[in-house]
Each structure stands twice: as C-alpha cells, then as structure tokens.
Length: 143
Image (cartoon, rainbow, N blue to C red; front, side, top):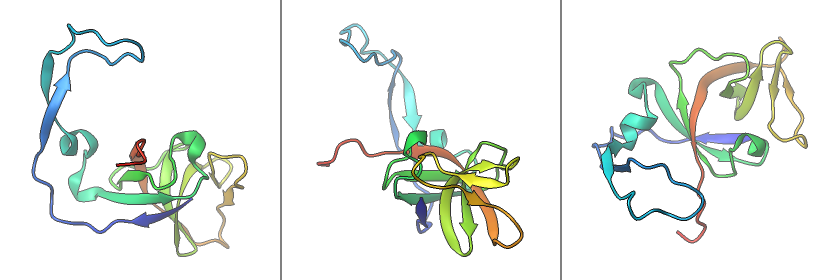
C-alpha cells in the first residue's frame, strides 16, 4: 500500500465535541442514553505526541484486512519505537509504504494475501519512519 504524507499545517485549535456516556449498541437505541459524559477533543484523543505526529493518506488495498481502506487517513507517531507486529510507515527504495513489521522474518507484510511481503535486507534501502496509531476510514460515500 502506497501512502502520501500530508502537509503539516499549524496546530489545530481545540474542538470539543460531546461524548455520550452510553456505549452505542448495534441494535435499538435507548432514549434514556442521552446523557453527555464529557467533551472530547479529537486532537487530544488521537495525537499523543504532537511534535512527532504526521498524517498520511493510504492508497491501495494491501492493508484492508487490518482495517485500512483505500484513501484512509493514517495517524502516524514517529516517537514510538516500532515493535514486531506494528503497522508502520516505511520508506522502501525511496517510496512510502504502509505494512506490518515482521522483524523475525525480516519482512514488511501486507494485510491482504494477494499482496506479497517486502523483504528487508541489505540490498533494499528501507527505513521505518513511524507507527500507525489510528486509522480514519470514510464510511459515507456521499459526504
């Protein structure tokens, strides 16, 4: 899956939205669950290390089984040390990609069996630049 890094802009001003205290069931809603527990700022919720966080746009289908759809917004934290099994953004031979880090097998794996893994060895220029910590997929196609 190729990724496009998004341009960094000025820090966003806080935008607090209501967070309801009740869980949202996939069944029928309860009218008694209209209580607002708190206010949620998505910047605070999604970005733990603001100076080390970048955003990227996914392109392709190699990570669909990890919940990353084509055109998903990826929130990438460069302050986190990548661990085996993390979904990472890496630069492979000058091209950004999103894959699962497999340190033991020395591979970058796709989350789609139709896409082969990328081997990591001394003949390939590969640098992991950050760990994907959140994914925002658009569900409504008409908005």
